[in-house]
Length: 338
Ligand code: KG4
Ligand code: ZN
Image 1 (cartoon, helix red, strand yellow):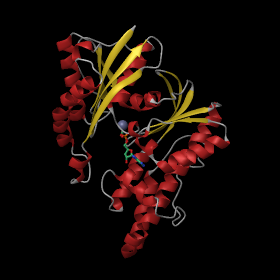
Image 2 (cartoon, helix red, strand yellow):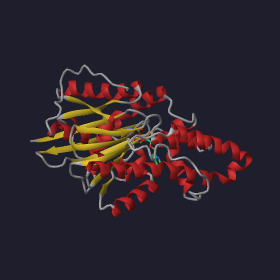
Image 3 (spheres, rainbow, N blue to C red):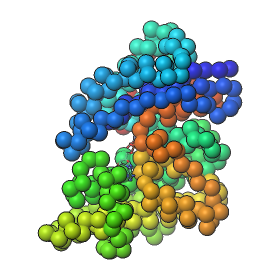
Image 4 (cartoon, rainbow, N blue to C red):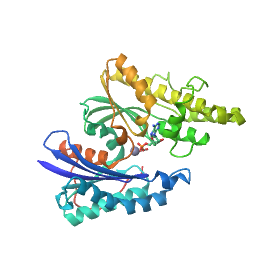
């Protein structure tokens, strides 16, 4: 059976729309995807303004849908299932994607399917030319979540460890903010870090030797703040060093815990997903560690690490193929911000 799935992502500050083709049991294929980032709009405020995000999603979502349909030579009438991000995310932003998806579904007389945003990230490496095989360990590192999981198949997820306070992306963003690097902080801090020394400042590696697979990043942020205050007027000149030292601390914990998860599960394959998965230093360190441990690493393509519609269409396609979830036609959409 062949299904054309239209996916809509609107959980935060990116509007993403994509078309994925699911045929039989084969890995679904991405036909086209389009993205509008609101970063510039929110930059003036130093972070995402929820009300502005919702309004912009409303403006962008249908033109983006038209774009992906035109690009792949399809029409709305060809769409078999409309998928959307059900949560977690900003409530008003989620409601835009859910509302548009359900309206399209009702008008086309086609079913809709709400997708968990993190499952979208988790399955995004299947959009790459060299998709992973189950089972694998997943390191999910986004702005709101940091988790290690054992993944045995679609919908068969076991959490091995997670952050007890801030997420890794939050650690990047908050550290960047207190260094005056603006929003979004992760990529900015990472760029600056390339000009600095990772050993310039001694920063904590929280829970590194805790013996479990949990993470904690709140203390690191405080240590960065303390260091920045101590530097005072010197901060400007030492910013690159502080950025490099911060990045090194976050990355070391992520890499070592991921290797511990591989050891614990005995698995020889790891998938990295979520915005922080775009971090170059993380990729380099993890690649080196995994090569030494004879472990295969899979990443989503760089441009699909952060939020996008392709991962939502892909997760819906894989859920349907696995019989894990049925698309529904009651159109009584709800969203799950948390
Ligand atoms: O997955 P994502 O796009 O959105 C959420 O679901 O949260 O992740 C966004 C997070 C932000 O914290 C951002 O600063 C971080 O990913 N990020 C990075 C990089 N690119 C994005 N952090 C470090 N280095 C990067 N290159
Ligand atoms: Zn995300």
